[in-house]
Length: 297
Image (spheres, rainbow, N blue to C red):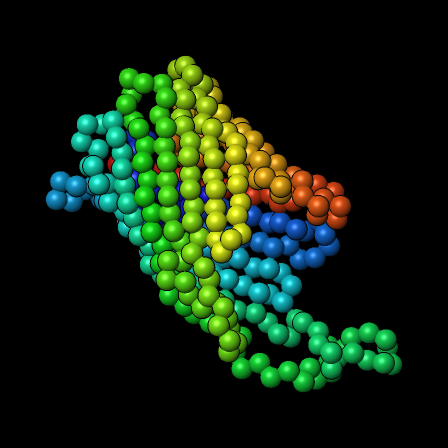
């Protein structure tokens, strides 16, 4: 999916890659193997380069929609995004950007899709959804303001084979209250730390190891892995890679790049204790990044 979903500092900031604007799309489906309606994620985004007052800016936005299946619990996040090249890439070697995102979080659920104590039928020995639930539910949806912040750095010296990069971002910096009904439950700040490196082995082969660490309210996630790119006959490039989300899943990536646009399929093989129920079947995901030029129709 789009990198500005992870870090607003990369909005419209393509470093040494070509293109004037990009369109992003992603779809992910998971947990279908345990016999319930899958948890699905759909994502769409757009960003573009902007040159103003002799400086480099980036503008864009995204919408991401998560549906939990059971109860039709839905979370939608819509954000507008802006980034600024702090160093303006003056020497062509160092790239330091910052960015912010502002938007809304929307949550909703369908109470009719749940069963309640009052719906237990002694006659049938089971639950009957046609019986009154006895529950008073004053609201089934909510809208909250949301804000993100980020920083990103990459070393771009083309005379070198090694180009390290690092990113830091904070999501939900305003800690919105996510409760739909009455009481308060604030969404704590999520801290994202990214470290990686693009290593140009030769004219055809590039290797990109990376590490991502996330922390939100004491819940942590660590993912380590690498992507490899191989240039075939111009303009085609194939990619493949493997990530390991520690204690959770091994993730296989396969894809192709065509004139700067990327099409990638990923599959999660579950490695946690849930493997007992999933037989290793975690999630599949398809992502697409269309890299466009204003001169091309």
